[in-house]
Image (cartoon, rainbow, N blue to C red; front, side, top):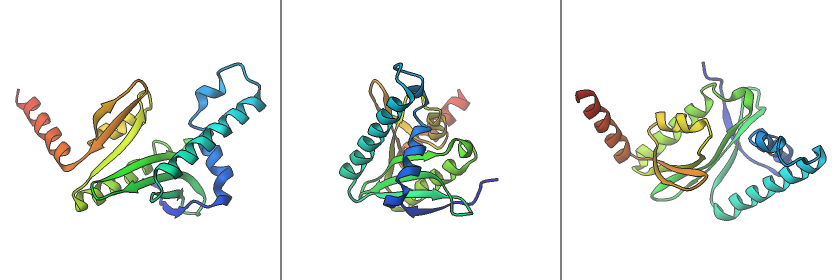
Length: 173
């Protein structure tokens, strides 16, 4: 069963939570570089600040929301940006305890449904070794670009129907 969740816009007071959430996605850095604990904190906080500034600058009309549980406690973040042709999922991150619970899948399905109604695509980027890649693939996202580190993935009515057609051809072969 999926927990109940809601959204609310991020506020300056959410900064400590957002930094802590960011840190849960950077476990590899916690073990790297031979830095002291204090040095790692400074380094990771600088990474968070750079990412946050980048998102704010490149998506000035974006929606930057916290994901809240039924008790209104923050459990994650969802940042999106919508244009006439697509919805960009800039970032979706849940606290580790909530990953794999169906919340992320539910949120993405709602975004896909919104895009379907508007007849637009949904795009996102994912680091190549991120386990979320499997979820995105199951939801009908296809790789449209790649680089050394990331996949750019897209869901659209067209790509969804092509995926279904390819699946049907595979079954009949």
